Length: 302
Image (spheres, one colour):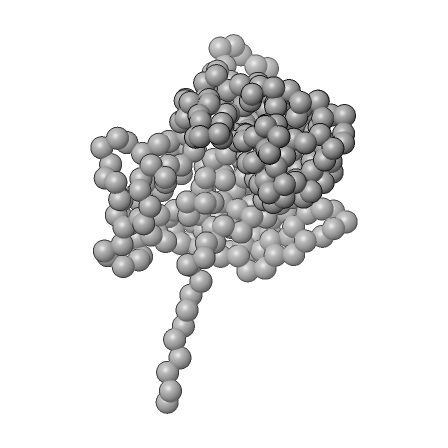
């Protein structure tokens, strides 16, 4: 059932007339994480889903779905599961530009025809821009002499992406971009990546269980507690930035940032403690300052 639906889905997406093929239930839902729409979208209803797929067709190109045989390792579930009349399954997905995964939930309509009631799609990598990990990892040193070899320019001097905020979100993004070979600099107002956690109240622990808080490439050790203290997490962030080899600049304040559409560059004024103002010209600026770091100054009568 799942493979048959997937075969019809990929043919229809390439050929068009998605709404007329009875692929989706009237009240179906679709969550896409960049794979097909190049955006993060949640759509409800057959009409909205069909329209979004029609709009995405030109950029999708050739679409290939195949059962995700290693689903247990990739997503932690068997590739198929059933609950009453509903059957669900995981697929690997490839478009003209990307690879990803999809989860499809099917249930029969009033005529016994399998239609999708829930669809989840997520990009995992860009074709031609895969992460430099696993079998693609670098050798680490060259085994022969290279005439005229010069040292590469430091990322700090010419970052393509500037991330403002060196907490967990900024570090995770920086790690991903580093393994995509995108020159990235992280700047943080405090001295170390974990300082924003160290400065909080002493009894604070993470509110989520540890297996929901893993960071890319470095899962927490098996002996760590279910709920990390704020100081344990702060130390981990410092270690993570060092182990990932991230370009991190602490004790740095952003004074001003503006974007020039003509050059497609930002102009960002930074000042590290005890240093002169520097101006950086990145193509992209990411604000990773979080939702709890903004100072709140109380006011008192009198």
